[in-house]
Image (cartoon, rainbow, N blue to C red; front, side, top):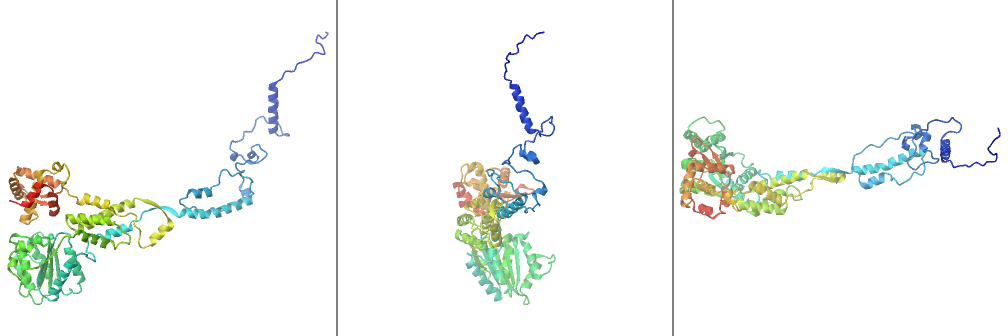
Length: 554
């Protein structure tokens, strides 16, 4: 059959895009495939991270090395393992971090050979040693408080080596001891003064100084506060002097035995020191009269030294002694410390600690002024300063500081440690207001609500009654009688006795009064817990209360 299509018919070529894509894919795949091996059916998927590729795969299909990280090598290729530097702990600062860590911007230009790499690591390890040594030189340390411990030791209330501001009184006591003990002459000395004025401390210091001279002297020291009754002083003296247990004999027989022993020619001199002698107050004052008459017995070997707070004990309580000139004791009075004397005592104690002051001068002056205005008690001033030192010490110990090790070693080796923080005026004020502040806030507004008028009158009556009776404790019946008289004189309505007991209970909860309850309400003992001077100073702030104290009991 003849062909209908012309032999010379032209054909139109259309562009085939799909064929171009397949050809390009074939070229790419042809590059990946090896020319000699068979064509693989699947393409090998490489890991994303170059670190995880090994051998030729680490080249990332590129003819040249990348600038990111070197290829992994085996142990043989890397060479021998160098010993690591010992790890040391310490604080590293920013400049050391910059010097030790390489910057990210520095490219790796050349891959090191195994030998060169080992040399480089050894150089780096040698260079990094000084950096580690520098990091150890700085550390965190607790603040040292050795100076505070030394300050607390010297601020105690024990008998010190030096007693400033009491030279005159100590000379009188020394002269008395030299005259009577060295001369073997009997006599009596009465030392008076407010609490904390240095009476017992001065006498103890003198007895320690003349200890060698008093070898042959029998010294008996008794604190009358430890005795249950005033009559118990005679058995205590007999036990110390006779060196044997006293049998239960009558008081008269015991006193005859003591008098016989004191007047014997074979007996050596006896020094009897009675501290808190006013506690021997009894009915008719027989005990005190007997004690003061012993030194004036014929051939007596007794030297008596009595210490008490009452200034006029021998004149007011023992008027019969004034009639007998030979029985009258020698008197020495210790006045309260002034602000200058208290400041001198504190500075003298603190000089023993270190050259640096633990307390500021302003804090010492403030403490001296406050204590001298209230009582003049040196023991209170020492207690205030010691508690202030404890407050600062606790604050310093809770702090940590950054210090070089060399400085810490030098501070440990040095004998005097620096003062991290001084005791200031605010610390002294805090202790005084918390501990020795007045419990009766009379000068502030609204004091009438916090401390009622009836309670104030009751406290005034107790204060006046203890002065009149010369006793520290009174019964509730006597207190109520004095309270009623004061209210009648001041034209103030008084409460009944049961209400008076409840008022006393309220004052006891405030820490102003103390109660010793008894079976009968009238026999309940009442006593002051605050010193008389401090109480009187607080109560005088009101006109009515000041008038009651000035007029006394009716």
